[in-house]
Image 1 (spheres, one colour):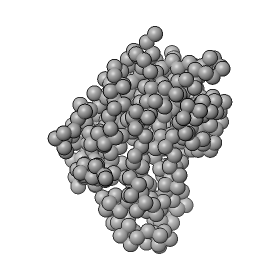
Image 2 (cartoon, chains in turn purple, green; image 1 turned 90 degrees about the horizontal axis):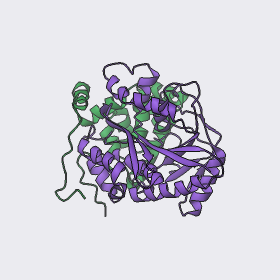
Image 3 (cartoon, rainbow over the protein chains, first blue to last red; image 1 turned 30 degrees about the horizontal axis):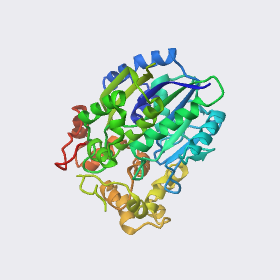
Image 4 (cartoon, one colour; image 1 turned 30 degrees about the vertical axis):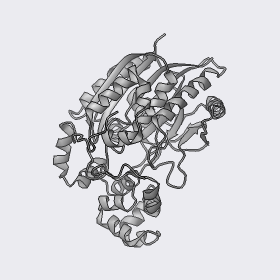
Length: 280
Length: 125
């Protein structure tokens, strides 16, 4: 049977992707951030999953205002890195896991989460930056990826509670798949940041620290946080953090914190990263 | 009733803003194609006139007045296609929206970012 072996959370700031692509990771501005991920890359090399279920948001790339799905699961065999206006990132094509994705769709929809099924989609920095942070610059990504896009662009996004419950349904779906697969669930985006208006540049370390601690010890408390509190305290774009709760719901129960990174700034954003393992 | 309109310096991109900004944002989306970026750059006014946007929206684009575009329904991830076309970064655009110089903004970020100031006494759960 397939099993979830770890949960990863990680910011997906586009400037991080640009720093990697342009060979700037050792420059003084970036070196402290990437130092935090050295452990991660070693850990990931030793614990490479067969499949990553990668929760992220599209940033006006695959989805314009024509169609705005709240939860969209990528069921294709491959997903091309998108040209977001700067030209596509020079990273490998993302290979999907169509059989598992189809199984998860059926299972999760039968558990009352009404997913949008996507069979053709380009993927933007929201998905490819976390892959680069975890795996570096390989010729091909070392695992299959199921992209799972959440609307956090047009308000209201799904609540943290809804995301957490979806994570639980996702776990039941993965654990009922009849192939022996090692699956990781990644929740990306955040942490505190605001990219727009006179309040741009907001960073709230106290909020972020509480959120990181809550992810480890008391995710149920985080699920009670209303959307508005994210907007106010973590910034208009900080509300991406609800996506982390899908990952945490998929782990349910107690977890072991394997690794944590918190760094300010990457461009306009506070970067947060956790590696969590279910404690047995 | 909306309860998030009092967040300082913040426009929440909700259904109302999305409806207001539909054509502005879809114009931005068109700039994801290199050929459209070239056409836009060669004659901005002519390119904008192909879109059913309001005159205010078109002028705000020409002026690169991002705060005005936000108030007229723009969303920052869509507006990013405009400053990407100009070869500018998110940090450039963010600094512009705050009214700070890019140097001052960058140094604020290096020093931990803009501090959070509670906007309502009762918040915190």
